Image 1 (spheres, rainbow over the protein chains, first blue to last red):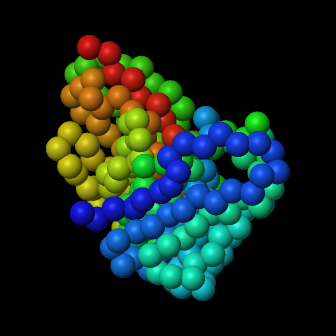
Image 2 (image 1 turned 60 degrees about the vertical axis):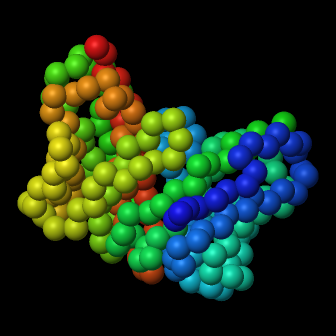
Length: 113
Length: 112
């Protein structure tokens, strides 16, 4: 089954404790992206990757890092999480970036205390 | 800076009504306008529009793009309670065509 898998689905943690949210897709897609969703703000793109070792900033990259060492994986790293990063996070993938609809993961709800 | 603005932000209607959701965009190197429906979990794809004036339809939903005036509309006819959701539009573009900018979303509530 074609899918985008995010882990964990829920996480409560404390300020400053490094965390990683993993994202994996099994569709051999070149393009992957991370979004955060906050009430009244829609989805905001954090980072995207057009292929292995190729990443670029979205609209809200501050406080986040990403890496794309393999085609199927695109982890989101919060080196020093802060409460303003409490949000619902989505990973997505497709074959051709903005030329195609994306497949979304089920989301990761992060709470930073 | 790219910008996508949706209106209205919230809409409450009764079953059977017709609704029109609006989306205006300013996107560098614009390539596509996408509509998604979000219920409890991840957004699900509705339409992708790349050409002006060509209506796309799926059942009771339809959408059209105006590249001259930089907007799109999503129409839902004969609404049902199952249409209650957040409707998101997004503009795709950017220098590497990977950037996607979403609007704030329109919360649609359909009462029986």
